[in-house]
Image (cartoon, rainbow, N blue to C red; front, side, top):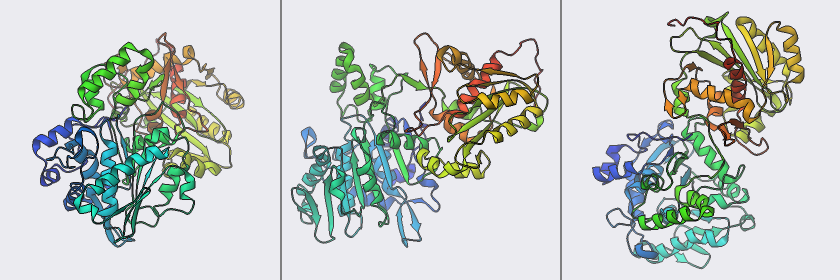
Length: 579
């Protein structure tokens, strides 16, 4: 699943872009290069507004610098001068510098955005623009004693941004008079500012007081310690800014890239509300033809300028003739995380089937239950699908989620979701202790089953032994059935879920379920993946709970329950009525 931006959705007011000097044609060009995923909530910060003058100041400062390498050397970093593209202004610079609010603690107007995630294929100029932004933070952000850092997995990589920024300063008449550029540091004597390159945690042993940071090629980081040091070093600054720039990784779960990429998607999908985090991801989707020029343009906003069409065509030809290079081409030039799994649910379809649900109106109707009890110290889910009275709707779905109360803080921190808020709002129940109290789940399930005509409860047998026996003893006449968590065991129910969501094969249609928009189920729907065995059989991919930020228990419970629904007797049907 991907978050696609409507063509009319810009992170900057259109009138502000015109005031900044962009033409309608340039704005249209930027819209045509829109990212696949946009994490943008800055306008939702209380009292936020867009300050055109702030962006003008940033662009004026950037205009003092020129490209220093390759065929672009000497071109000023302006749209008119050819060194800056409209998409870079519209999707990166303007939203980051333009959204501000009055911070009472700082007693000043400050930036809303504090962390920026820019994920784009190679050769799209992300490092050069980041070098220019680093110089803005050092020289033109109104910060005394600004400390700015370029960080990467190796010193050579970190110095790419640092050295480029230094060359920009030395070739700028305006900046050259203000800085002292040495081999390892750029200093600004008048303000006390410094800019350094970092590549290992030992270099920050004495602590940092970070105003700005550029964290380059996040996908190669093997440890999170350096990133943590930079992020935690911003506490004394009024409006720090950390920019993460990267291409896709090799689908390594639990890495710092995986964490930041996943967090950006959560903000984009509104699973997490965080106005201070802004992110853009340009990428091809799994269903796109990797050798079509349309796909190349979708993933590369600068295609035709940087990278050149000739270069991408040459790389694509190499990928076609050298199968071992194909994954590298997809990762570096289409920004695809290469894996053998794919997203199960399109959130647009999921949101389109939210609708209204009302368990009270469904009393006595046929229902099917699903359990995913999982580990005793993590999420557990009970799902129920009840035949609906609504015209065109087959099932209304309901979830109950459980976590151990003593694990709430750890889970909230690990998963980066608003778990405490979900508990407060009643979407999750925290059971006493550091392990799940199955007696609470059983009691809730019994109450639910007595309100409807429960047909079958399906479950994953791994953790369900004792509880299933107890439910079976109390629910006379209700079938208790295990569902094998294999390709053959889960594939029919997964395909039934796709049908109910409105997707069958390649055909999309209106969904035939209503689930009420439960935010916990929505989060799980946004991350659940399936694997295909090559014979059109599917099974859910369960994340490694020691590392992953994903949980899919609610969807697993739903799939288990749908196995029973799929096998229901066809002769007994209710006539649907308009609600």
